[in-house]
Image (cartoon, rainbow, N blue to C red; front, side, top):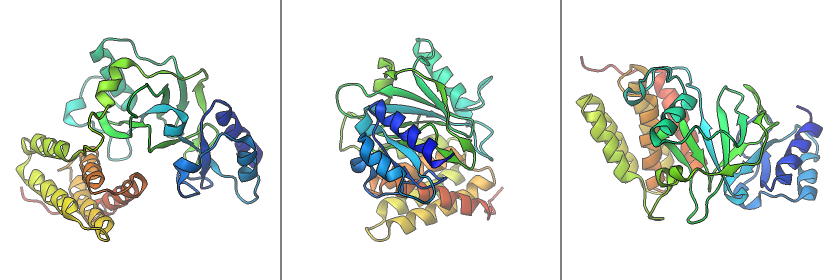
Length: 296
């Protein structure tokens, strides 16, 4: 997409009251530091940024300042095509199917009368207004397989942004609806100082019922991450992701469970969202290239 078209898309998002900031050309990574604080709706600042010359920036929407909660429904990545056991239900193939099941379980119809974009890779972003009260934050898989959310501390790519998978486009153009009230208790964190380390233990307990070997390996790697000291945290997380990626490669550990458990442990030791996500992704990918020899 041309620089002019991306500028128009950035201004259109800002015109809705959404705070935007530049992402690296053709990528999802921020082009600036402290992006959440520096995201803006000022058309003059946006115009200067997107007409500064060079390759055109993609567009990030900072969800917190924009008052948004975005539900991210992903398709499975290569190697993720088989849902985890909990979600092996008729017709469930991706995050949209999982979210449909969640909506049916809680009673109301699928709440799609809101602003929706595709994600260029075949997924969807459902935009909702942040409800009053304590701010919601990002979640990864808390609602279900391939269902994440972006809120305070998170961002999404705005329509018009271009990646190697294609262009983000609007599917349903309307104002974001209020976040359905039944979703709030599923996403809210009652204690702002709470971490997800207890949930790591719940994941281990569930996994132990399936494979004591895998559960022991996962527990050991998570304990190493939780014990990591400042200055060594990212390296430790990368090593743990690599080791677990080796188990993912031989089918002993679901990718989503490994990624979620590592993310919760990394959150507990204070690693920022972008850093831990990149480290977990690259570590799991590298480990998957060297499958582990496991006992029968």
